[in-house]
Length: 151
Picture (tube, one colour):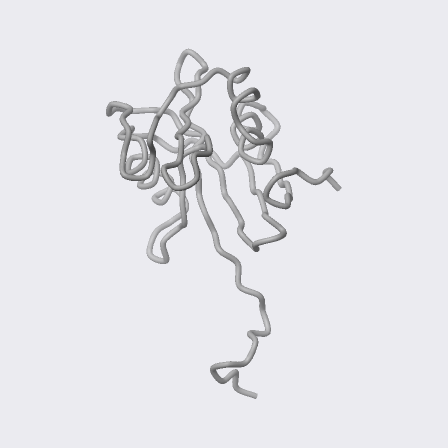
């Protein structure tokens, strides 16, 4: 049977986003203060249809921070159960550029892990802190505010 417009799709559709856990040689990590909601978050955004996850991370970090990065590895997969958003987070190292405010970020900072704990909401802080661990990637679920216990 064909799936005509207006019918509910048989497979639920998810939105996929990508983010960079950009770690400097001194251990500080790149974060942005989002212009739209004022939250401190890792740089990232929606993955476009014609790009690989790694290409998306490079593009988003550059657009939001002015920093060029080299993608190293996937460190976590995070699903917002309330909104159906799957976020792929990649550890990256900076390879050039200057951190600057952008059309999407009112501030761009390099924070220590302790500062990340103190300044960021749990669902975003964990994406950066997970990237510091050697036994990644992590797979976590959350409701937009709180991380659910791992199964």
